[in-house]
Length: 469
Image 1 (cartoon, helix red, strand yellow):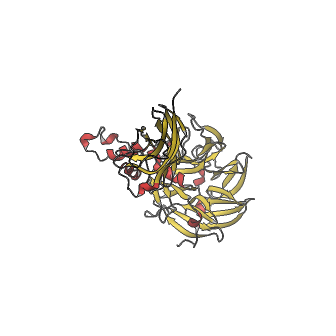
Image 2 (spheres, helix red, strand yellow):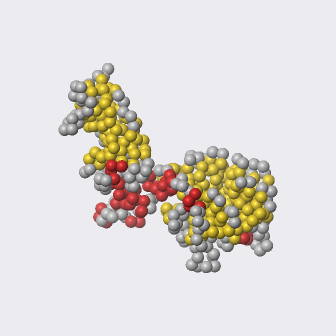
Image 3 (cartoon, one colour):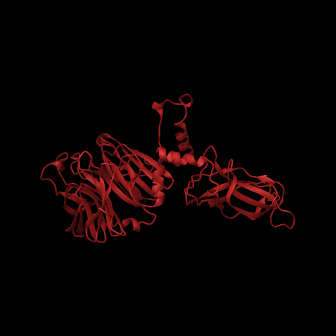
């Protein structure tokens, strides 16, 4: 099925669409913005949301009823936090609310607040004391109130699986203590948009549109167990799981045109089940792809260590830990190779230098490193990119040093605190050692790489060095 002309991708700009997936074969996080889904990693995942300046992610594994909850958060650099919550069993969804992520537990039919840094989560609501009697799953915030979605109120473990028990699902406003939607068929992922509700009625295989009063307006036939929902302009992206009776089937993301309420595109996924779909900025996507590779030097060590001969490995293979996807580690390791001379002209240092400095002083200057190339910049071996200062003495009456003048002093090399992605910039506190002799100097601050030398666009200024006190 072809996408509608001028479809949803054209409306995204720089944003990306991320999909979480899992299943008996595993899963991961996928970017479906391009012509085919791109796997960012292979960590099976259920809940996904953006809040508090981060992406929050609930990991998924078989046997969740006896497993602990693992909650990751990401910023634009990579993994920011990992939090283990032993009290939360069978975690499903995560939603940012009231300054903290909240996680739903289907095993305990409960919602937990996970304050960053706290040892244990806080129980904020529980629907039933019967284990998985209601199958609490998705969370959504509407009008500053947290809402919870469930399959129904049953008095037996997994009573929602019994024949004839479909159509009992509901969405509940926890603040008001009332149901806002009822009569739903195994609902997931409720959303409120433009005065209307949209819900994945999973066992109906539909995306259902309802009025504010809960009355059904339209249903789009996705023809799969629907779960996961986001919007891009007049389009809804809906997750649909593989048909379990077909061994060779895979999940899909169905694109529904909300004007006609029909499926206009189907995106084949490599996993069996989809849980959540979010629209995120390019920084979030980059952070997820980097993952635990936020420490570039360690990621590079992982990459190079894998190629060492056995006699040069400090640990046996059965003790190896690989936190970074090999593709990400390889891309980061490429930063340690010689830079292309054409590309380096699109790098540089930006900022303002002080007009006056104190002789012999050791200090720092806050500047920015700008990367306009197609590759990341970083301080990783063997050819590390750093920032340095050169001091040129100015002759009396001269505005600039002569073309053959050599620097009278070169400051210490300052490593980049973080990787600078393509098209980005980052701050760096450049180490400065002011010459001991007072006088007029031209200070030049530039990037440097071993074997290449000084490169890129530099920042320079006349600096008067005055005697110290």
